[in-house]
View 1 (tube, rainbow, N blue to C red):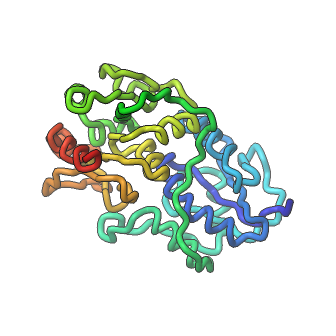
View 2: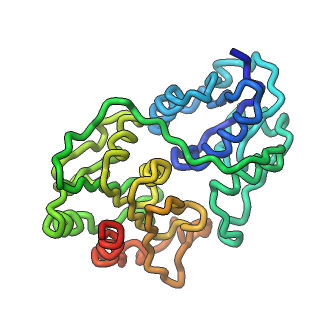
Length: 307
């Protein structure tokens, strides 16, 4: 096996990693080994880390994961890649000195560029000329759901990693939506996610905090529909190309939205919306953008997908 000469630094959210995967695959295709190394911070130990370790260990184009500074760089890399909104660490300081291109995050609000295509633009500036790869998510081999014929299995997710984002991103009417879906379709409703998401919502199946990342991805791949807010599981569903209804409040659809043709991004388009990348995103007093998004708005999108 040839040693890769490409290393990619990453410290950010799971959704950001999934949107970066087309660029990672492009970088691997340019390397003689057809693989890349991934650099993480060995000091990175928050709640996201187990999912990253599971994800990267299952991806065959990842040759080695370097946890810096506990692990040192021993290969002779010719390509050092990082993104302009990477979270700070000792490793990032090294990448900023060694990278051929030091990308600065664009004006997300003004440019209307999606994160997937921004990453690909950086790779093209490094010489990549091929087609864009699909987003990638590894899934476990073992099936999670035991499905009955002629029954719809609909997943719901109301997640956000940061507590600061909960008011801006989480939708308050899942209880009524679950009842509506059960009555309208006779569907089996499945809770997915992490931490205390949807803890008071009664569903047919509850997988919150019960699966590894790749097991959770397998579960999502088996759904007939996923209804979710702007969170990591949305990007998993987008990469797996499953039918989705995505509920947006203050975050940027242009930057974060699902790009699969099987997905519908739902927003009520208030004049103040979106407020992401402004002080209002964290300081709003009412978050009408998500709180006034009605069950009827969601059901309209659901019926369009399941017609």
